[in-house]
Amino acid sequence: MTPSPAEPEPSPVPRSRRRRRVFRLAVAIAALMLADQLAGVLLIRNGRFRGRPVPPYQLTFNDAQRRHVREMTERWDSYTCFDPELGWSIRPGGVSDDGRYRANAAGFRADRDYDLAPPPGVLRVAALGESFTHAATGNADTWCACLERMNPALEALNFGVNGYGLDQALLRYRRDAAPYRPHVVILGLMVENLLRHVSVYRPAYHHDTISAVVKPRFRIDDAGALTLIPCPVESVAALKTDIESEAILNTLRTTDYWIMRAPLAYERSPLFASGVFRLIYAVHENAARDPREHYLNPEGEPFRVTLALVRSFNDEARRNGARRVILLLMPDERALFDRYDGLEPYWEGLLSEARNAGVETLDVSPRLLDAMTALGVSALFSENHYTPLGNRLVAEELLQILNRENPGAP
Figure 1 (cartoon, rainbow, N blue to C red):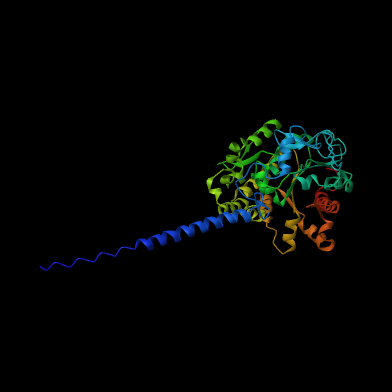
Figure 2 (figure 1 turned 120 degrees about the horizontal axis):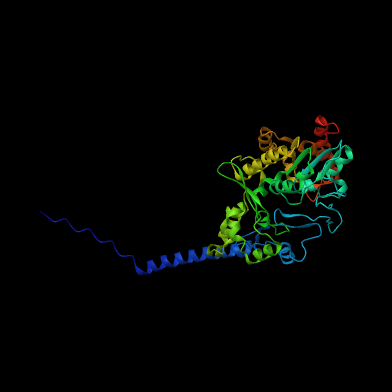
């Protein structure tokens, strides 16, 4: 048997060629690393890219927040105060520094005090919500004050607080508003609010806010019921200490939706040595803050929690004797421009679910859109809140449905 010839061995790569390949690879890696570092140096300025913060984050995002933390134990402000149950609230008898806002002795926005029992022949309304309910005008130009002027047989008690969500409003209703035995409860929902309902630490959701504050929130348990997550601190001193030491992160990692969806942003990860990675993660962390996508996702936590809050409000108010509960949908400037540009009211799905639960709803965007088209945006909005005219239009829309079924005294 003739042996098969041995296969020829591959000729070895010359050492000089291997060196050239290694050198080229090293040059390519060095170029990529240099490009990565240049991206960080050239694109990220003062921890921001195109005005948005870039991780890794600290718990304060701007000088106003840092000043608020530094001074909060000395002076919160002359109108609002720390509240261990609600996060913050209105100071009884408080007056804002500019004199625009005034609170009565019970700590809600009014120029006078009200008896706990409604006077005979008067329809008492309690309004709860955030700054569009509280209003950014003087006391006389809030939509609650407009309601009282338009119908002398009506009292409108304004329990709105700047920055609130319906979660804080529900707790404020239980503690502060229910004792006044309102016949009608109005839930003021500004379009953006459903994003607040899954937040605990305000700057984690709204990086450019001026206040470093915390709040309670609700979750939906396995049985579909709301479960309260209390405010994470019990005193303003503890809040200051926990923010400065970042100890509060231990709680926020399991309670705050915005930190839970991008936890790495608050870590000192070696991955952030890469400028490109920082930019990519910043895009991820800053995403999902468009209310529209959450209104169109009924299975998402912000939608589900918001709807559950509305249902709980309705159930509790009616058990306490309220005849009507009205969910008042108020668009901010951006949402109204969405309508102006032809977008359908993406919040209609939530309003429809609320009506199915027995809650009346009022969407004031058509009335405001007509006025904005005729008069211009500046007639309705100042610093993204309603002007006195905007508040008067809201009051007129409310009064139409209040008078239709209750034309005067209860």
